[in-house]
Length: 162
Picture 1 (spheres, rainbow, N blue to C red):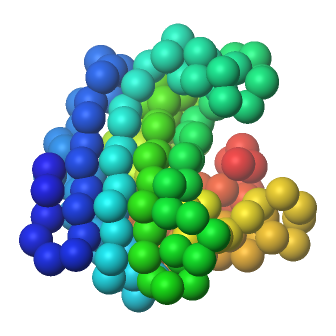
Picture 2 (picture 1 turned 45 degrees about the vertical axis):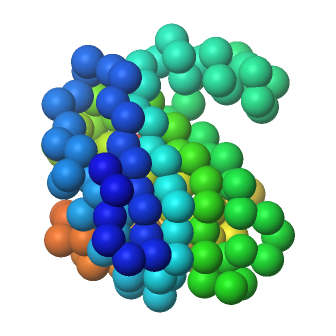
Picture 3 (picture 1 turned 30 degrees about the vertical axis):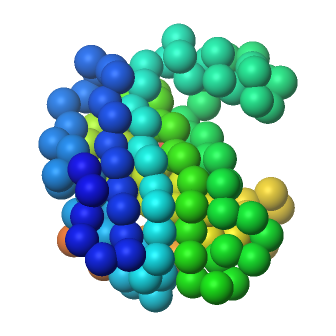
């Protein structure tokens, strides 16, 4: 799905675990980008199952098994500083379905959460230590709200942490 202006977002759905409306996911990503004041972006979102995600995880990160989201920054080192993003976001919808069941919320919201998480990585955010992870989780909540989505159930009493 191509958008108007300087933001282009393509969604390719190669999975069967979660029913996702591509136009809805594009709107979620656009709202998140707008809240981040990013007005130039070329983003590809690929929705896959756990088997494909595990293969990508092994190939690109050398880690066995599936993961929730992998981002590929194609914009270079200065892109996010210039308000421009270019990259690929690969989401395991199968993992999203499993985690959503554990957290007791909608699988499509978990997919959207992974996309927002990926957008933040493309924008230069990092979650490699506790301080950065807390800051990134706070930003995720802001972007989920900006996209009109519920607060992610991370860190709430009785809920599993991310």
